[in-house]
Image (cartoon, rainbow, N blue to C red; front, side, top):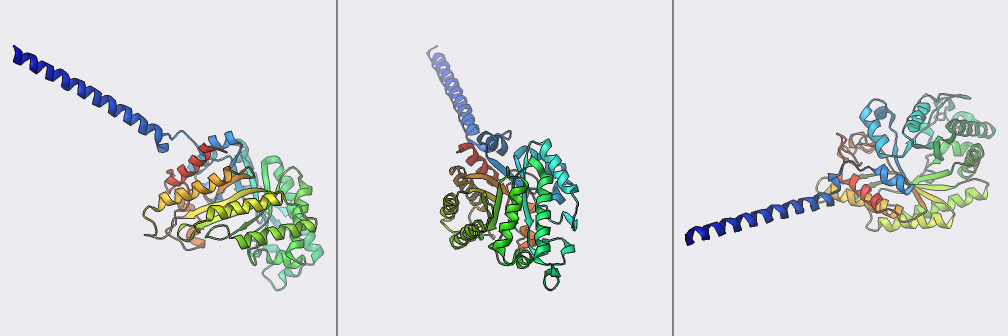
Length: 368
């Protein structure tokens, strides 16, 4: 009998320990689930950006956006702003083709999004063919003619956009050498051309900010170029130009990135503040680096995205953050830069959220 009682006590003790172990594992599993952002796929970038009244944007890539319903679904779910590039809309002098622009506006309205109009005046090679800018003397236009063409181009497109746009980038990349060559040459200099183009934009719709944008290097936001950029803005304002906001492109390459890239971005925002301007990150992607550059290139990529969005959100002068494409396979870096191994965006080729996505999400959840 005593032996039987001893055996019974051992069994009860074993069952109690087992129950406690199962309970502990259940609690640990619940804690891990709460801590892992990847476990809650119902969260979106947009839900947190909307709460903050902050712009989270994406470049509309028409050749992908128009043919793939999944692209459109993710875009409408995750982003509250979208970048359009209305180049070559003026098909001949005084005649405009708004078919694509109207599609983009309908999509934005259906998804309660606002649009950003980039590059109304852009590089010679992206200008309408009828201008014949490739010919000697940039087509031989007079300053009076090109001034009238700029005014018509800018104001007609802005009037057509109405209140669907949250900003207009009238002139793109002015400090980057040669980007706006013929427009500047025919107008007697870039400063004068930008002053007139931005004033025409303001006159067309004074309720929408006019933005000037540039690229500042793959290593970060170069300080020397930043200083040149804001000197240009002050000269343009002295000539009567109207600029409300500035944008920085951040097409960075992780293995070339300066250790102080966050401080460089903060310096850019400080210069904007001194010039009474708001800031947008207008284009961002992060090349993860060549094979072997980092132990975990995609965790490093996540950190870079997080740091930039975090810095933007923590400074009230920064109003919008936009990525330059949706999925890795649609990146411009493959063809334009020859980086065939580049996976620089928030979603992979199968529309799966990458660590970079969760870096942006984390910054948005932390808020202002």
